[in-house]
Length: 246
Image (tube, rainbow, N blue to C red; front, top):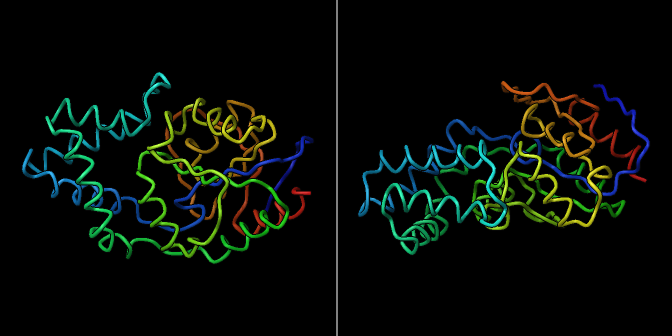
């Protein structure tokens, strides 16, 4: 267990990544199953394999290329699928609703709770600190809420949750973090981003946010070498927050 803190500004809001930070999930299986479920519901318009290929590329596009801030990630995704697969938006929306209604059971087995996550979140709430579920907004909200339930966090109340319906940017884009800070009405410099991804989460420092890298199940990617202000496992994170949230 280890942590370090060198800052002086108070923390007025905490942003938490979801996957690998507040719960365990096998994303290498989760995402393909999710997309395959949607593809099966669009087979009247296109072959499932083609849908899967285009959908994966569209999700990567949301992450790798920032939009203009005028379209949500949902709108951008639908636009790409309509252009490349000629699927009407109404049919796309129906496919998501159908999957939400009867397709989620295929994914639940891939998610496991992290026992300390509840204690960490409750500790923040006890101090009245606004909480953001800052998961990368490439999924609809129903997929995020489902993972929270499976991670034994469904009863936790977040002040803000990023999903593809309400977000115009994605991590690691700086605009994503600015967008969240604006929604909270808190200066980025007084926000703490907590996550396990050295690229997607630590990039919050680009807008002045503090960061805590949870290294229990760390994800390391190629790209900019973002500085890591604070680092440790879940026990260290809990201790850090108990000491710094006053």
